[in-house]
Length: 529
Image 1 (spheres, helix red, strand yellow):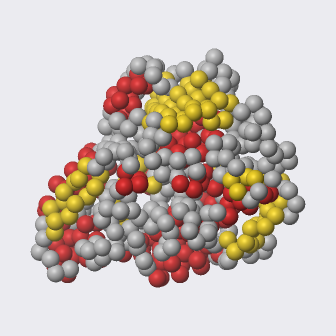
Image 2 (image 1 turned 135 degrees about the horizontal axis):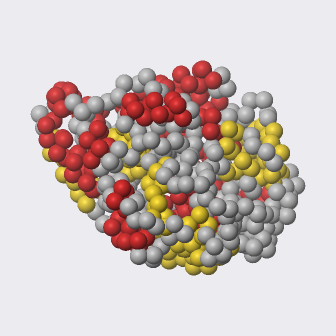
């Protein structure tokens, strides 16, 4: 399998067709949006250069860091995707394309991958990107003491070597047909190196240079005049602002303090769009909201307790009340209808207080009192969802106490630490990536500390399986195992809802793999002349 400046992995084919998606939408309550397509905005004129583009995001923390290995928030994910480039990139249409790499190929069993780098690609400081930069940038993600969010994924690499200045070779411990997709992650950005170490974290080879950064507040950029692409980097300068409060974010848009905002509150999206100069974008995605319990701590180490909590949330009510229909029902596993191997035959979990009581009885309990840590800095409506959940749980004999914690430092002080808390995932382009990073036994981001031997066996086997039907069977079984044993209440898949003023130009196709056009908004969008 080879690629020389052309598309190689068609991830769009992992998604259901529009007809099938709309059919599923009717059954699951999904809003009328197709993965990766722009909804609610007319075709735009040709892009124009110039101006200062301002984007407001909900996430950002004083603990944010410029080292991609320390990814802590949506703001830094956005920053890395603007400043840096990875070896590959998932395009808006869902296809995987080379980026720092010029081409890549694999052997017969996908256990070896060879990447040829672009010639004369330079970092912002003028240094040429070489194989040494790739080897040093990526190798640190699988060392024993690595804090990388992708440590478990990258530990599948047995060796990474170079062949001259422009070729790198990955030898994997076992075959992985999706491995090049993983290498599109912003966490795996290629950084400038010197003498075998990272030379600078604020220098990249992306479409924009970083000129200012204040953790939890802003990132500022200016266009890279030496970017190798002519169809990126339209604005002269750009700024990403953290505005955690939903109302403040929307006010910033309507008062012309910013040009684009993300994570629009679904309950006010229609009202916001009534302004003649404001456009709403509704993009179906793999993003999902979760309440992970630490299964290594009581009472969540008992699966009957976990099942009682999963049965005590009215997902339909959350979808209608909190998301206003801008999403679909979650089924306690992270694979959405937009994923290639989504299991549509898995029974949808429903609100059932009586069955929840039965599970509590099996756990030796007649009632349960638990605390759930939440913050609206995660997503609009997070706290309201927990309050609604607490009302639902009363019928099951469960006293669920929403605990609103400080917005700042949530990902460093609450997530992975508190026994039960709120979380969200943008989702991942492949099942292997999502399951490996969020649910494998060895992952740094296994947010429920879940251990399931059968699941982990299937994870390795499915990664290497080339037979489509066998691979599907494995991923279907993994979804069922996660649904019925894991410690995460996954109650909803949420569309990416953003808004922009009418002076902003938007491509015909907008990526749904991450928010903000796959976090590539700054380089893909423009200001109208």
